[in-house]
Image (cartoon, rainbow, N blue to C red; front, side, top):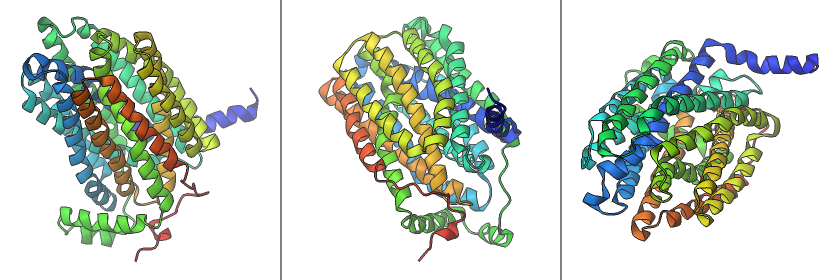
Length: 444
């Protein structure tokens, strides 16, 4: 390898060695434990098969209630996200919001231990609270990306965060794997519930560095900060929300991207919420088989996240998104045509790689389309796109599964979202440079 290439590699890696950057990436490591255990694997199966048992409530009732739980939590998060973002940006308090929301998420994750057979309402309420705090905390985590990245490395840094996140998921699965051996048998329920406590502990330990080292940039206009600090927060949040809406209408590329992101994110939401449930109830996979599937899916993603982050910087976010969405459509067709375990394993691994790659490119493109000084405010709309997709996608899957009594038919609904997102993303025009400030977009 030439000295020039070695120097290029060093220049890419050097920004990753800073404490704030490492702390930021470790937060991805931390929160993935929640995403894996509570959203994707253990709790969904526990909820649909134990809490909402078919012997009590009928076939696929758990699917419906799980979709409703996910949808309600996302609806609440969507309502609060713009308000939180506007306040956090002006008051330079993103880190404070991140800490508070994360701690509450951890508390409610711990409370899931106290759910059991037939406790549908209690289980739904606790999960809705936990997921609300998780989803809104992610908005503030993502909003630090533009501040931490340097020119030309936003994709690489985004990929680094995703890679560390998948590593966190892999380690979490390895830790809880022995507890899944007894499956859903009565004598193993206590072991399954113990995974919720382990998740809360992992989340707290690895999120702690971000509490210490992620700092907000000082306010540009201190007098404006002091003035707004006297205004009632909710009222002020809505005022800033209105201003952001008026600014955004001048940025057609951003609006089109957010629409596309909303559409194709439905597919990712369905995968996150129902993949394990589909494997268990349609293919009769055991809990340990599902855990093994996630392990196999995480290994390539840890490596591919770095690669696709680099690829985003090389060829552009939009091109990466277009290619990965086309691959996504092929994967969905592949799974629904062949109802075989081996096919599902291969498709899940491919879907994991594609999802991570698309999200890396999406977060990078969003970072490039928004102006400086309003990162959390604009990322709140990015969060809304993801959150509304987590309402529509899972609820649509749950309804179709309950009505048709077929999860395979429900899975086909994701094709509509993927094709729609692909059509819209093709219309997005990517600017040559990122807007320097909010003044670049006129406000009437």
